[in-house]
Image (tube, rainbow, N blue to C red; front, side, top):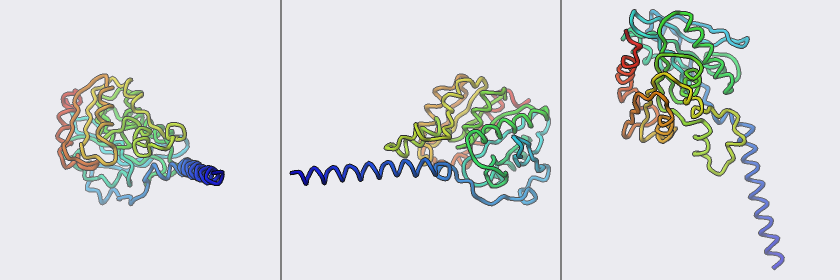
Length: 270
């Protein structure tokens, strides 16, 4: 039976080596796996926003590039924290809707995404997001924050540090490491993941009213993330769960109408 023990030991060794190799690969390539920072940058001239301007916001010796349009009297400025795919400019139809209803908008790419130079990291994304808020605050308009997907992390962080009038979270995660653990349950993501985006911790320091929207068929961030994050919200406004909606379906499902009602309830519309 000695040969059987040798075979079993060899098999166990191969499994351990393969597992450690998978962990090592994930650690070395995690940001390439975590972020999808590719895509076309739509020129502002093609976006149907004649009143908007290109802006370059300085941060940490670099710049964050985006678009800005001020609101009409009585409406707030929406700072839009984009999701994980493509450039912020790909969502120009959203900005058209904001502007058509009198809202202002500041939207931008974090460093390392198509419109802004640099390398991607959680620290960089959070610094860029704070810099965008600080830049917008100098304009003197009431501010509301809108985070989508990946952007719900920095939006929540900014709200925990600054006093906007409202925080809207579209398809949020409890934390990025929670999503990673759900996706890769056999990997030690809590130990090796660099960019964990702990919205579950930041949300506890958010004093402004919070609206959370999520879909029950979300295959990117499970709906339970939004539900559990909302449970932690100190100043709850609404948890909007859309049956059958996937990760990118909430705009078509009417989140803009829900958002306008929310911003009015929050006192951001005068």
